[in-house]
Amino acid sequence: MRMSARRAAIALGTATVLLAASACSSGEDSVDEKKPVGAAKGTITWYAMDFGTDNLPQKLVDAFEKSHPDIRVELKPAPSNSDTVRATLTTEISGGSSDIDVYNGDVVWPAQFGDAELALPLDDYVPKSYWKSFAEGRADGTVHDGRHLAAPLFTDEGFLFYRKDLLARHKLPVPKTWEELAATAAELQKSGDVKYGYSAQWANYEGLTADWAELSASAGGSSVSSDGKKSTIDSAANRKALTYMRKLVDDGVAPKAMLSFQEAQSLQAFTSGQAAFHRNWGYAWGESENPKVSKVKGKVGMVALPTFKGRPSPGASNIGGWNMMVNPHSKKLGASLEFIKWMTGTEGQTILAENSMIPVSAKVLGDKELTAGQPVLKAAATTRLVSRPANTPKYARVSKAVYSSLNAALSGSTSVPAALKKADGEIGDALAGSGL
Image (cartoon, rainbow, N blue to C red):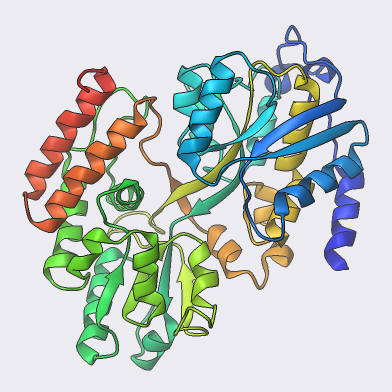
């Protein structure tokens, strides 16, 4: 097969030297040689929930072991609930256990895990050039207090899905700004072709924090300062973004029921043919093309999200996905680092891309031959990423302050200025460590 040959060539040509013991260069690529890592051999345990299809984690392990016969990886399945995984890791690692060597961590965990010393900072063990191998924005969220607490494995991102058949019928272009989207959606509603103009995740939960991060950044705003120390949510840019969101509901472009929509409900509104535009993660493409659940198969297009008029294009897409992190108590550091290097390198990332996961490697994501015929990967190569306000160990409280205040404003129970002022105070309290 063509891709198998590609991987064979990649495996032969890819250098796997990562360890501090082998680093002898100076300047940008130097690492602290005083940090011993041990030999890259032996058995390590990788704790990860299932992802992809057809037992993809085990496929990756098998390919790695084939190219690294001195290292064996025991895959320890993790529960499908990320909160349960976080609780398990917190208990084991804080108790000093070395049973798990490498684990997959949610993209919002680095600050929390770094603050609690549950993840090994990687900067002392890899050259600075390693971080340049990732596509733009993919490694930014792994940093806390100037240290990389994780290595990106794969991402998910917010995309705009649209009814290409309806745009063609009415000779309308794909919207490039949020203002254009509102106008186009209203026109399609007026024609009677769709009931709703737009569906997204605006319920009172973390999904609204993700959606908000995109609209806020596209307007030039943020919720927390870049150093994670203070609230920035009560700003003119954010008033613009939230006013826009409120107007979508007030004008009927977005249904009032959307204030209780999470991913499944918002997607169902789109795949049932009721909505013209839809914001969701990459998986929504597969669902929209599945004739068992979708009435719009073959009628859907996807692109990066819009921006606001006068702002950089495309708009911001929130980054999701999973990182790889190292247990600071691991007794197999050499093998663990070698495994991470391979998983985030060309061969591992190619396997992920072949199995419809969004790779983090700049080389793989930019491979037009590999991404041809995969609309999700093609769109992902064009996105401009933004993180949720997770650059603080208090992310859970910050997120709740964001989504609860915004949902109240969108429902009309409070004004836009009052909602942002309330969120500002609650975020400030969270960052200061006060309150419950």
